[in-house]
Figure 1 (cartoon, rainbow, N blue to C red):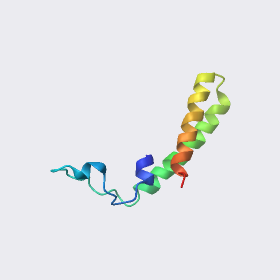
Figure 2: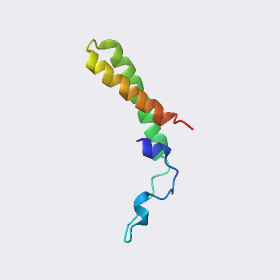
Figure 3: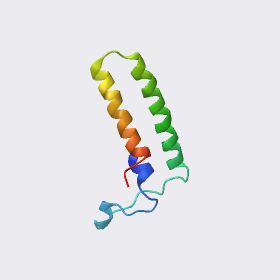
Amino acid sequence: MDRLINTPLGAPTPLAAFAGFVPPPPRPADARALARADLTTLDGQLRTAMLRTTDQVTRAHFQDLRARIDRSLDPPR
């Protein structure tokens, strides 16, 4: 999802240097918007789930996922 959101459309991939590489088909125009919407929804679900769990390991996983989602939605510049 991170690559889908943060890779510019039409950006060359590292594999493009290999002979015979067939590039993937172009992404649908709304794929980036839909991925962003899905991550936003998932972040809200994780936030709610964190309030309900008392298990420390589960909470740590939820926090990690939320941090990764945050980096995908708002990458460092």
